[in-house]
Image (tube, rainbow, N blue to C red; front, side, top):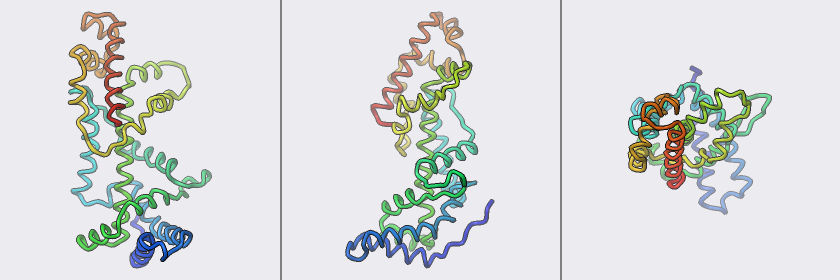
Length: 274
């Protein structure tokens, strides 16, 4: 693990107060001067911020909070598993690496020829503007923390919210499109189907809540017994022909029932803006 970078906390504190007090008193700083302070503060903090979200991205947290972060990921998986059906797991290490790359692409500023040279000043600015000076002071006093440490924690919390959103999106895509994914994986079509599916159903913006709702228990009420049966067998890996043999129905009927169940789930997610 890379050694934690040193940051001059006294300097961070001074710049932070200048910036936040300048927001309260518009006469104290003009817009250009305020932006200059923000940029100076960010680049002072940047090595620590990048260190915090690469590698083991829970390293800035206590053991208790670290366990909570991973427990939340497990709860997300459970909430998107339909009534005792297969719980879709994912490779945490590769997923986190992908999400970080996506995060940099979406919110960062970088040089394509130097992928490790990037700036995350926008999410830093967003975090800073969403955190009051009173809240910062109370936390620093209560836990006897450094200002740089508190800002890093807040920055990581914001990034974790992004991770949760990505996990919800990816797992929901798998639940809603498992049959189509299987078909595309077995075809020679070179089209990036996943991007098309994501764009068509706008899954990234639909599943954007940080709260953990037990989606499965609500959806359970919306599906018929037959829809439960078909969906359960399908998520266990049975083909429509095999499901038809087991349930004594036709393959076409199995496809219709699966489509109807998926539409109900999709409709619920869209209606509730997940």
